[in-house]
Structure formats: C-alpha cells, structure tokens
Image 1: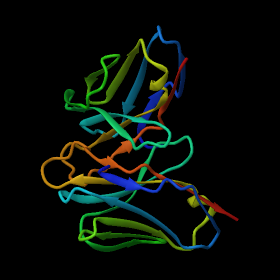
Image 2 (image 1 turned 30 degrees about the horizontal axis):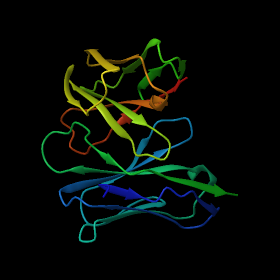
Image 3 (image 1 turned 60 degrees about the horizontal axis):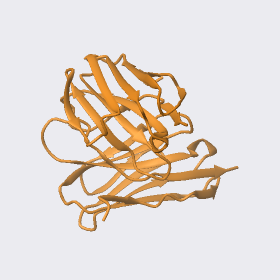
Length: 114
Length: 114
C-alpha cells in the first residue's frame, strides 16, 4: 500500500466550478499536510499548509484534514483558468527539525476551461 | 522567480556520456535536495544536504553522484545512465530549522537518456 494515494485525474471543469482534490494516507505519524501547485514547465510551489484536523481557508482555497479517516482535501471555489495546474499533496511526520522529508502524492492534473 | 535556479533546463545524453546538473539558491537556506519527477509517479527524494553534509541518500544508484560544495550550490553528476532515468530532476531548498516542511523548488532540469 502506498503511503499517500492521490487520484491523478486528469480533471477538467468549467470556469466557476467548485473543485475537490483529495488524498488518503496510511501512516498515523503524519502530522503536517501540504498542498503544492505545479504549473507546466515549473517546479512545485507551496499553496497551503496545515497541521491540524479541520479546515483552513485562504481566499478561494480551503484545505481540509480529517485525521481520523486519514483523508485530506483541497477545495477551490470559483475556479479560474489560471488554476489549471498539477496539484500535489505532501505529508510529513511530526517533530524534530525539518529536512523536507515530505511524502508526495502522485499529483492531480486540473484543467479549468473558460 | 523562486530563488532556486537550475541549469541546464533541458539535457539529452547518451548512455555513455557524463554530464552534470547544477542548482543554486539565493534564499540563504541551509538544506538542499534533489528530487526525481517521473510521469505518473510521485516525487522521489534522492538526496538531502544540510549545511553541506549529506544526510539522506534514498537508495539512489551510484550512477547519480551528488556534490554540495557550499550551502548555496548543489550538483548532480550523471554517468552511464539508463533510459529509465529520463525524468525531470528538481532541486529544492529549505530553512534547516523550519518545521513546516516548506520546500522552494527550482524549475527543474528535463533529462532525456537515449
């Protein structure tokens, strides 16, 4: 079983739609949860970060974590063509200094068409 | 501009060639990483350097040889590669003591092995 499972898509939605991206994980030791966005021909960039169960909102983006189900989600409201990218979930153990030992999902390719 | 610069952006090499990938970060970070990104697979951590010292080698074949002369520069020396090594190689950096796990990625070096 993979440590982090993410549906690779591709996912295609019309502009203005609500997008839901999801990952599941198997290791209960994971405590930090991140979403990275990767545009074509670019490196990933951190979009959202959270370490607790519940919701975290940033503009049109909401990150949701359910530790009891080992399930994380990213919601995009009023999606725009500029949101078209690959979205990667990344998860990390708790404690200690960080050496960036993130476990990444496969990435979901999202296209928002006008 | 993420503050992490990778060269070359594209590289084509034969299986008997020797080449090097270069990464430079202008963020004052102390930790640097090499990741491999292949189609339909999660990002794979290859090497981690903290204050120029290698702290992680994720069972990478010896045909990949990293070098970190200082905290701002990272190289990946390549020799006798295989076609399955064709991928996007991403360099990243982070603060050593940052516990959030945020990585700053370069735009990657697209490697094709013939």
